[in-house]
Amino acid sequence: MPEADKEGERYQADRPQAAPGFFLKGSHQLDWGMKNRLARTFNPASGRTVMLAVDHGYFQGPTTGLERIDLSIVPLLPQCDALFCTRGILRSLIPAESQKPMVLRASGGPSILREELSDEQIAMDMDDAVRLNAAGVGIQVFIGGEHETRSVHNMTKLVDAGLRVGMPVMGITAVGKDMVRDAKYFRLACRIIAELGAQYVKTYYVEKDFETVTASCPVPIVMAGGKKLPELDALTMAYNAVQQGACGVDMGRNIFQSDAPKAMIAAVNAVVHKKAKPAEALDLYKSLKAKG
Ligand code: 5RP
Image (tube, rainbow, N blue to C red; front, side, top):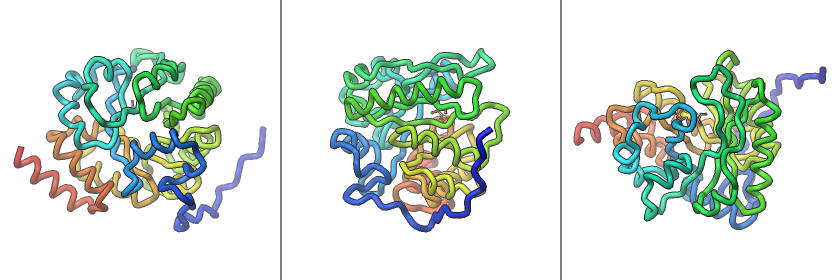
């Protein structure tokens, strides 16, 4: 058994990692096309993104709030920085006139009907991502999961294909049902994903020591939303995540399952890009909701 690393104390989260000549952490030495796609996904002015995640159907079918993406999500497009969706939804429902950057779900396999979800494979060719003018691709990585090695290998194959064409890969920390979701786990998972080449990482927020997760990950982290929370809790989580070093969010259910999705995405935008405090953002949510 290799010796496990001791809990580190040297994260120095108060000292931002330098990225000379580019606005995004860990991305300054990438090629032009890759940087350009990242600069479409992340707002160069704030260095952050509000990505709207609507890819859930890839394993769970018509998820609550996504039954009619044409009616519920297309109207939200102007308010997000990027959309995270499947190629099926992109081709069938997202207007090709849209100028929004599209990040495409590139893994799949087991459905929600199976116990073990880590048995995924790459589910799309990089050629198709290029054909669709994608701004990036995203893939689950099941660190500690039953099919850990396969999912890591899926990601590294996708990264190699992405590097050939300048397509950023978002590695997503997929946590098994019985696994502990704490900073120690996410430090491990995010760092492995970054070390193995993903250009950015999507991961969950944890209340304790999240800044050690972002500080020890050399590429940008976007916060995953997770299950639906009351609006103030979701805005507080997003606020804390960006204050503690996340470069934005990739949120789904906390936006599209809100009673007022348009108001909620505006409130998330205020937190992410305008540094609004959670209470201010909640006021914005309430006033926009009241206006309908
Ligand atoms: C799970 C995923 C999802 O498919 C989705 O993007 C999750 O979004 P949310 O949890 O915010 O509803 O990436 O890891």
